Image: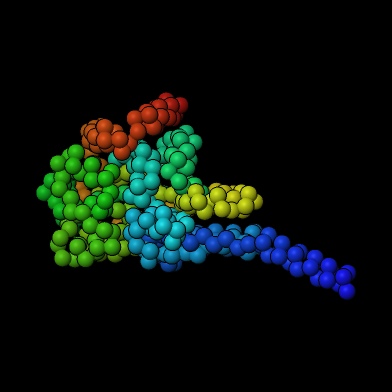
Length: 335
């Protein structure tokens, strides 16, 4: 009887140990990307890969299409523990580690090659910046090239002082760009832009071609600038608290799988950006005069914004200088 009791006890303890070893970790993850979009397809494939490779120990529960609110709402829920991660655009990123938004400075880069080179050069600083602010960066991504869309032709940026242009509510970066150039934006959450365009509260927005189509803004804005203003940044992040709660093997799996996620998101976003431009070419008219824009003058407008935000400590002079140095190095090597 004693041997039997000991045997049963040992089996019970082994079973408990196995259950503990197989503890399931659920990553509750939010994004503005709608169901069926390019981003969501990539995220869902990533989630399946994590579940398969972890044998069910790490799974992802997605909250797409803004069901968890705008990006500031997502961040608030992450800090309260209701969510553990999110895919964010520059607006949300700026609420965590604002200096990295130097990569969104208007008219800074000429092409994707410059963007990729400079971002890779400052990647250690980006990782450290997020980590210092209680987030772990899993994957870097883009939202696409940002253009002006309007209900009326816009020959140049000076005309914006007579327009009702949208500013994403709470976005200090784009707000500073508008303020520095004397424009008076209308501040609204992204969820209210379509209605505002329909009622005339807005007549101009900044968006990527893909977002303009997905959010149905393009139907209200028949004119589009031919020269991109900037490339919108994005990031896949989880809270440090969640990341630290994972055993080492799952931390490694989450990191390694996210590298492939970032590559897929970058490739797919750039491809779909071009496809969206082709679609918009049939439904929108190009704003005349942009091809002849003085890029030096546009860059000067951008630098004015960067300086304002640096003085206010939203941007970092040290990181700004690293970006300028990397960009100069790339252009020098290219020559």
